[in-house]
Length: 606
Image (cartoon, rainbow, N blue to C red):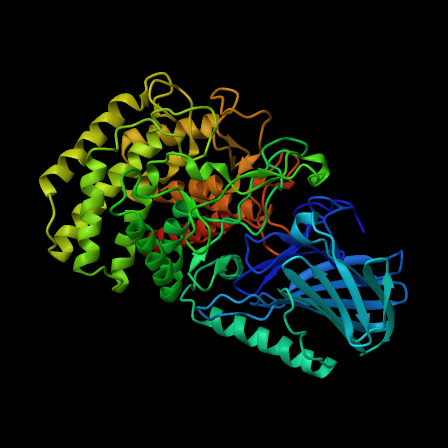
């Protein structure tokens, strides 16, 4: 067992309320309960000694590990090849599709001997509350109970178990065709234990999970060239969505570094307005109307929460239940992934001013209208008030889309998205025949366009740049043609695209910006940003540069991990960096695939 396996050496399983990461060595080294943003139970990714883990793997020293998903599912299979035989560990969580949050969540594990004889070892070492809480162990013939303040964990297994201090270990030898089960259930303190489960019953649960995922994916309408990539991304987005509210989290993890050993270590287990709003288009492209509808309702609730309260009408992120309080704390007792410190829980960026979110919110609402997701009269009056408020508040410096901590500036992307807010609101008012101060909104929209083209343009770079008065390129502006701020084939945009290729693109991979040229208040560097690479593909396809777009898209897929997942960034040696897996990356993959498919089909027809 590696102390800190590569970030990419993991698969994701989940039950639509929380999730777990399983390494290709058979180790559950990330799991929180009862929600994505709850304190961890297994977190050895952030501290091998203090974080806790759940291992189920062959004990043979000479073993080769391979990991895959059962086709079109969120069921993970880890295969172990040794001189004595071939074994498998199957991991899954049963989907919790209801609208009511639950406090009971189970990671299911099944060990099998596929060929020969395989001796499996089990180690269950939970460390509750990010490793800060102690627990008591009660081991009985039916399994183990771990009791900590406010939470109880139950280990059930068909293999014999023994105490190892306050933890549990076990072992079993399986011969060809034999199986054993193990499961870990987290629930509220004092909750009843799970009922006993035989191997046969566990297999029934397994096939029910397979049927759920394959049935859900069957409703996708994607029939393009990259079905395997798109389907895996769709399943990943579903796994990262909190079913009771429809809010997606940015990633399943916290604290995984953008630079190993550095300080760019954030908590991504929350729902960003930006990410969720842009995902609406990706979900609709695939035909997942129910998921798109759920998020737009969640977004509408957030807009109503502050409709009558002075100040900002939205904040950039929330907890999955809509709670706006995300107090950031530093977990100094944790070593961090390969020494990457500090480890942060919570996210202080929630208090930042990022004006672009109003544009993304209106973009989502406008896109959802195509499938009949409409706001009622009173809902529209609230949106109209928001636009009236934005007329007085769009022209301000802010922290920008990348949540830099280097002070507020007049970020070009923020102004572009404010333009989107007014543009989409005007379209909705016309399409729905709703009352609106259209003259005022039109003036604001047109003023923003003139201002961006005047102050956001760099004569030196012959491009739109990150912020007014600067010359730094920023990949967030790759969204400009998608939101129709500029024509995708117009000279101003093509010049900007060429400048980005010169300054931000490295062997088809795209950096967000250059921190050295535009200090962001943090030490260290970062890798290329996978979201931006897919936005680059989207922009290239819209510009008609299809050969380059397809090459970049296909090449980017070679950086996916062994089961088709992406973290936030790609490092200088091709390694995956940052929190994992990142929903924004998989959302932008779907968007790029849809745009590129459409462009290639259009060229074929003509």
